[in-house]
Length: 135
Image (tube, rainbow, N blue to C red; front, side, top):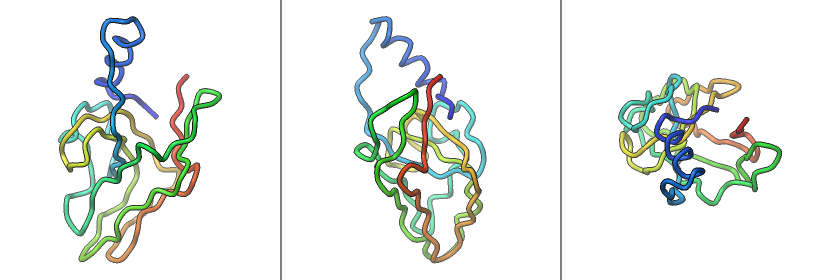
C-alpha cells in the first residue's frame, strides 16, 4: 500500500492542525499497472470505461483499524464484464470519485495474484482481501 502524494499532504496538514480533512467517500478502482503516487484519477492505469466496468463504493465496507492496518469487512464485488475483456488486473486504487478518470487517488495496492477479467467474469474481493497498512 502506498499513499498518493495528494493523500500524504492532506494527512500531514491534518495532523498538525493546519487544515481539516473531511472524511472522503471511497470507491475501489481496478488497475492494469501500478498507479504510483498519481494524484488524480486520470493519471492511473485504470481499466477502460467499457464492458460495464465501474468503480465500486466502499465507504462502509471496512473493519476498524488495528495493529497498523485496516481491511475490508465485506465482500467487494464489481459488475460482470459484459461484451469484452477488462484485461489483467494487477493493482487496486482507492479513489474519491465514482467517475472513471476523475477524483483523487488516496492509496493503492498490488494484487497478490493478478486476475484476468474476460467477458462474463466478475472481479471480487473476499472479506479481508484488501489490507491497507500504515507504518
